[in-house]
Length: 624
Picture 1: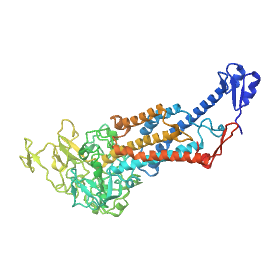
Picture 2 (picture 1 turned 60 degrees about the vertical axis):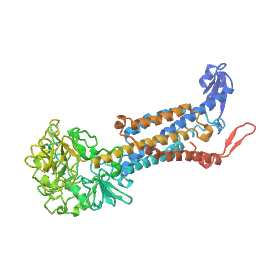
Picture 3 (picture 1 turned 180 degrees about the vertical axis):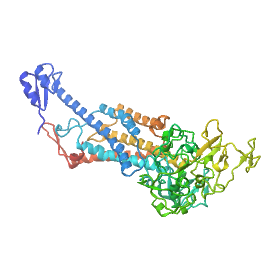
Picture 4 (picture 1 turned 180 degrees about the horizontal axis):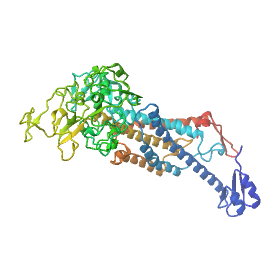
């Protein structure tokens, strides 16, 4: 059970040197045979150097263990976001790019700094380790790094992630089953409101509309929870249309629905009817007021120019990927089938992340306020393979498509669908509030009121619904070309706010790992003694901590680096979310070491000076 060391310098000592646990040969007087058999060679033939060699070997072994224990801590907060995404289907809290940024960026210098760590005060007072049991990586190290520190770091990340999303209007209760990457940030988000009020862009509250009964309006699009409001449930409209056809990419023009040929390039998308099924049950489009008050908010979210590139919605991008996002218009089952829903397929259209409107099976199209369907058949929960795309272009006027885009089916006087595309002269802007007549201008561009023979020009900067436009003004394949004065615009706020909110939350999760990793680095400085006895004399480690914070801030705030990694400019307060967990890591580990020392009594042999320690339960199970 003892560790045996043998010294020698002759050929006859070689068998004993090789057999011993530690064979030591003399560097000056020793034979070549003894040197070849030895584990250690004393270059100065001084036995006192054995102590120095043992100390250096223990220091190297210690620092390797510490570096490994620190490095693998981040594995848990890196893998748990994907487990949560798979098990609970929440929006992905951490991307693979940010994981690489941690492993290949922020963790590199701190991990290397462990090589410069000074020996602990008790390093030569410990009994020799058992090489068959006490190896570099042990089950107790895995338990320490994964089961203790790693779990706390993961909790810090999820806490920060949920705080950020909640600050932008998406409470933790809205996240499960909403994480489909083809929906979050790409499709309109619907919620059932309990209390609260609708608010306009200026922050004025509408006290007449009840969010539990009434849908938001164009001029009051935001929901403000107030003191007692809350979200009962949130989801997406069912993606119940998927065409069997594929459009010809070379001929496809996103501004001319006649080139769609009913195709969605293999993607499932919601329809006017599935959206209306949501609204009939009190699920309305959700644009949080907290998102409006955020730093990333842009008023143009309410009137996005579809010629401008938008990676989340694929506006302005390749036509081959157009339907992987939210198209500038809506598919309608009733419009294609002249008032009928059409035939369902046998394939279920249920998607995780999309609301399954079982209530729609009990609601007849007669209950729809869009009035485009005139049959009494209930809308099904399976996919349909025939629909017409309605984006308000001139070829749709006075057709079934034109009817279903307005609330009461009256293309002349009805209210328009707030999710429908609209058109502006020269540049996109806010739409007219409901009930407001469109203003027209004379030949000189002066506003002159209602449309007459002398007052029939569209006003610059004004936005109009398709019913206000003539065939020769819009709807051609050349629409939105630089030579054309008219722009197709669409409200993407209910998609863009959750998209940006998630980017902030993912960046905050990344920063929380960096902060808790600093605490993990400090607790790995010692394996047995308190950090106070070791001190902070490792200047390379101090530089590593500073570089870790600077790199994290650079990746978070420096554009276009943060756009490439998917991070955003974090609020200062969101950096502090992980600090309590970092303090918890430090206090937890200091307490663990203190209890280990208190429950493992040491005894010194007066004659030899050797210290033996009777390992307590905590040391036997937790000392790595």
